[in-house]
Structure formats: structure tokens, C-alpha cells
Image 1 (spheres, protein in one colour):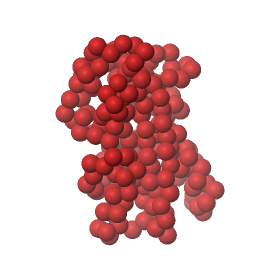
Image 2 (cartoon, rainbow, N blue to C red):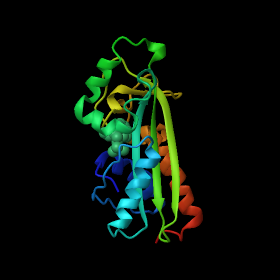
Image 3 (cartoon, protein in one colour):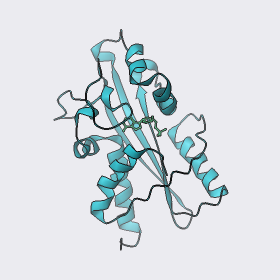
Image 4 (spheres, rainbow, N blue to C red):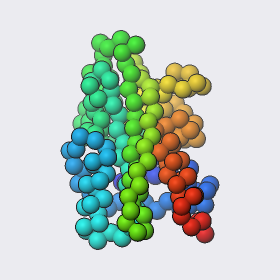
Length: 190
Ligand code: IMP
């Protein structure tokens, strides 16, 4: 349940090799200006159930939390991307020194199973905001985020291919936890 093609591509790359089909449903839900990703997803699930959508379905909300900006853009990441964009975040960080540029991407997945029970899965990827944009793969804030990971070598997510990004990323971690849950609790994929 997301309108973001980049997110769906990442989820497919992890779920399809395990035999699961990822079906994107672009119907929207109001993104509550809530304090946490969890609240955004919970309110989204309430809205979708009330509007008649039958479970099972999966909601995803992610954000980029920048320490020097007190967690901004965080739950407002989509709005920030559409307004100030990567360049705006770089501008806000212009005078921030290298060691104070830490940030984290977080993903919250909410799975409403066929019986209506809710299961949450989270993933975090720590890193830092680059001094300048680099790379052309991925989407969103990928060109300005450098994950802290052995092997990342100071490259942004946008300088990695999909497999490498999902191995390190917040979304990769959350989706792998979700798939492990499905594998042990759901009937095997046909
Ligand atoms: P939302 O989960 O759709 O609200 O996403 C928040 C914003 O953060 C969107 O504008 C996304 O493009 C951006 N975003 C979410 N996940 C990622 C990511 O993995 N890389 C880069 N940007 C992301």
C-alpha cells in the first residue's frame, strides 16, 4: 500500500525470490501529521479498513531523521522532499561539520493479516548526510545519504545498485523481518 515505485521495486527484489508476489495498491490514505511513523501507519490502517479494504495488506512509512536538525524531516519527509528537496536539506546542513552530520533512515511496516491482526516490523539504517549530492540510482533522499556500513566506502545510497542498498537499508531490514514472519506463520506461497 504505497504510491512510491522505488519502494515497491525494493520490496519486490526481496519478496519475489521467496515466492511472494507484491501487489501494489495505490489507493491513498491521509498521512496524519503524527509524531511517529507508527502512528501514521496505524491511522492509515484504520482509514483503509473503515473504507472497506479487506486485509491482508501492508502499509509502509519511512523517514529520514537528521540529528543536527532535531530529527527533521522525520515524519514530514515526504513533504520536505516535495518542497525543499535534497538541495534544501543540504542547505540546512551547510555549516554542519562532518562529525555532526549523523542521520538515520527508518522504516515502519504495518501488516494487517487476513484475520485483521496487526503486526509491526521496523528497520533502521544509520549514516550521515553527504556534503553534496552523489549518484543517480534509487529515489528520494538517496543521493544525500551515506550509510554507515563496512563496504559502503562513503558512497551514498544513490551510488549503489538495488541489491546493495536493500542489503544495508532500513527498508531491507524491515522487509526481511516481515518475510521471516510470513515464512513461519502463513501458509507457504503457492
Ligand atoms: P513516505 O514513507 O512515503 O512518507 O516517505 C517519506 C519520504 O522519504 C518520501 O519522500 C520518500 O521519497 C523518502 N524516502 C523514503 N524511503 C526512502 C529511501 O529508502 N531512500 C530515499 N528516500 C526515501
